Amino acid sequence: MTKELLKKLSNAHGVSGSEGSVYSVVKKELRGHVDEIHEDTMGNLIAVKKGNKFKVMIAAHMDEIGLMVKYIDEKGFLRFAALGGWYAPTLYNQRVVLQGTKGTCYGVIGGKPPHMMDDEERKKGVKVDDMFIDVGACNRDDVEKLGIEVGTPVTIDREFTELANDRVTGKAFDNRAGVALLIKTLQQVDSPFTIYGVFTVQEEVGLKGARTSAYMIDPDCAIATDVTIPGDHPGIEMKDAAVEMGKGPVITLVDSSGRGLIAHRKIVKWLKDTADKHSISVQMEVGTGGTTDATAIHLTKGGIPSTTISIPSRYIHSPVEVLDINDIETGVELLISALRVKPNL
Image (cartoon, rainbow, N blue to C red; front, side, top):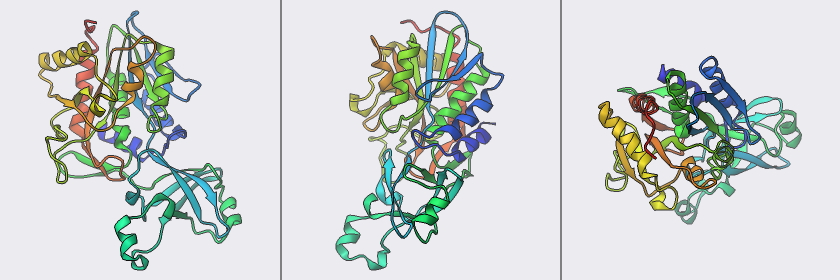
């Protein structure tokens, strides 16, 4: 079931550069469904389904935004650096998981209590530099005995939960939703082409894994699977994010106002024609916000025709992201159908 797969992926912990926990889930799910699977020098997990000479790369980043310990003070409190695009107030008073050398430890993100803030401090909001992690230690030696050191990766302690109407909430749907979409596609697809399913690393800190893997594979075309922001809830308007949860996956025309990806029109047409032929519900997006692995891929070597298929996900880059499971399943249907027919490049 897609829901159970997403639960496993969301509950795994894999900050940029430390994606091993997610890697383990992916590798287990793909066993027996692909012809080859290996890890490259960068840490990307590359799964291959062999076909003819036409190569299609589908990329989904495994990493989630997180934190990393950068200093341990004499009283045992941990200062940290943010990895990826955090909105600092989201972190305040969260419970966290630390992947220490002696196993998993838990802590809480503390800061100055609001009761002790003056009016000016309240207006400014809490910054990352104002916060720290409390693991219950009494001093620096206590922390070291727990296997926590400078460089220890930290993620939010939050578990996947079901909501109403096939909607679910959890951490790291950006981009475990895209990972689930790619896994389900590789499990089911029957294509004449050679498919490279690339589970990339370090997307949240610069699209790094996509850049190196695309250079090595040199595919004929590529699709990134990721998430996007819907405009269907209070605080945002449809004119600013013209897609909705539950209305199907999203095909990107442009993201980041063109500073990221301007999708290859023939790849967009290939996907749109597939959706029309098979009566698959899709949405089209011209985005002004963030970008995806497709940006790095389409600029590799002489240029690789690329676009993104995204799952609408509310409240991304928070511990309580929300999506509709049906959008992932429709995305799988779209990819499987498209991969039967060669794009007219």
